[in-house]
Each structure stands twice: as C-alpha cells, then as structure tokens.
Amino acid sequence: MTDNKKLIEGLQVIVTGLSQQADGHIIQSKIFAAQGFSKLGEKYAEHAEEERGFVGKFIDRIIDLGGEVKNEAKRETPVYSDVVEWIKYDLEVSNRGLAWVRPIIELARDDYTTFDILKEYYEDEEEDMYWGEQQLELIEKIGLQNWLSQQL
Image 1 (cartoon, helix red, strand yellow):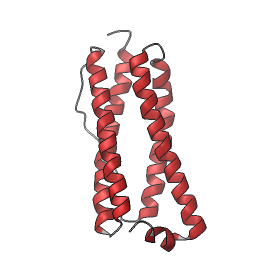
Image 2: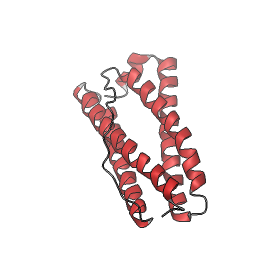
Image 3: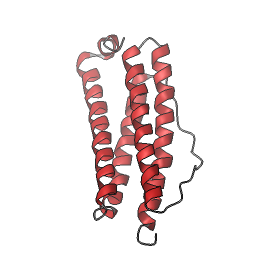
C-alpha cells in the first residue's frame, strides 16, 4: 500500500467531494423542478446518479488497492434558487475540481485501471464544465427569460 498511499488518499478525497456534489445536485434538481424547470430538474437528477456511479467506482478501486474507505464529514455547500447563480457556482466547482484531479491522474499513470477510471471521470467532468459555459453564453445571447422558457 505504501506505493499507492498518495493515490488512495487522492481517490478518497474524490469519493468525499463527489458524494457531496451528488447530494448538492439532487437538492438543486428538486429546487429547479419545484420552480417548474423540469428539464433542469431532470438534468441534475441524472447528473447526481452519474456522480454516484463514479463514487462507487472509486470506492471499489480504493478497496482493490488495499486502502481503507472512509465516510468522511462533508462541508456545507451553498444551495441556490437562482438558476444562473447556481450554474456559475457549479462551473466554478468543476474548474477547481478538474485542476485538482490532474495531479491524481498523473499519480495513476502506471496504474492503468485507476488511470482509466480517472480519465473517464475527468472527461465527464470536463463535459459538464463545457455545458455550464455554454448555458451561460446562451443566457447572454438569447436572454434569461428565453433561456428559462427552454427549461420548462
């Protein structure tokens, strides 16, 4: 386990943070659905499930590497009723998360199984980041009310 210690620690941080994000996405999903934005509600509910899937993969990998999985305390994160503020916040989280994951991917370079899981996660998170950027650009171009009407 000594060779994998830093990698296991990094995977544990991802498990903790990603499970927190999944909780946040399901909360936002319910809030947006209650506001009548069913498309956004569905998008974030699906996103939460996808994140839970990655949490499971990372937990399995920690176990495979001989590590001890922890159910760590999670910090409080904001909840938004304003869709635009939420997208900005979620985009910021994605940007910070991607920057943080890059060195973990480098640690896994010679561990092809872990590398593949991290690469898949990175690509998914990058796609989410691009979606957030695109939505903010759309809001700017077509206006908030027009964009919101597409989310009903």
